[in-house]
Length: 336
Image (cartoon, rainbow, N blue to C red; front, side, top):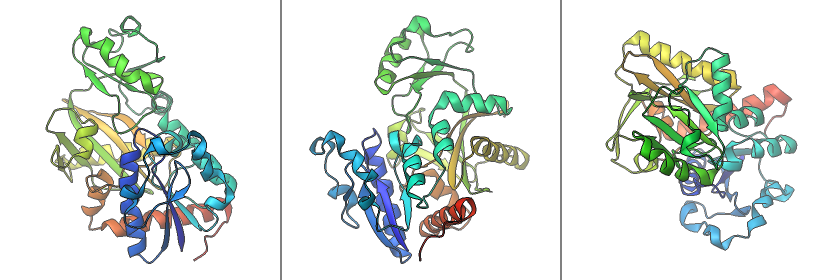
């Protein structure tokens, strides 16, 4: 099968996307697929096995070049598109809408689910309507000041301040003193609207989903105390426990909540649902990631490994899910 792996792009997560894309592309080659590595920033082909080093710096790419992936010839040779993009157009439904128009099968969630999941405030509205517990929150414009934050309504300090539509904890701050609110808002503002959220003291858990299959829960313990960009993507910066040390009934409850959260947003393929578990063992759903990272330190491969699934097998299953879903929804069958 001919597979185009879309990676890179222009978001703040370009570096991680290239790392994810390289791993996925190599796995597809190992599985015998003809693989094209495409930089979504300009539609250019990247060298097989050396995608990260072969990608040009963003400063060398024309501002309008990202529209190249919309040209028919860019994806003309692909039977299936494997999306390895993070942030901006890769996860917010824009790319998915474009691929829907081309009629080509692609991995992951569709346009609507991607857009809602990327907009954290909108996804929290859906969680609340479905009875899925999520921390109290407030959506603010980028120009908001500390006086706009409804600290008392949110349950007091500490609070989490983060961009409403970014991933990988980019621009995230945990505010423990009122004096820190201004700087936290300033750090999140460059990315657009700001989400302020009650901070849940407790444990960091994540539920990975492979279709409707709930993979073992991972517990994350960042050594710095904050699971930020550095803790996520630096080897040794965090400790991971999979399966998480939870009583069986609690693990089942958290897993089912993760599946329900993904379902109410309409997600498909692989997704990952992040939780905080409070001191009373009550789970709180934070967000759903429709294109989880697939780097060596990423959580979905870790959860898959816990059930004996190799990285290559995981990538192969993600591809299978994309083809099966396209056939089910549209009757389109990828060429083999």
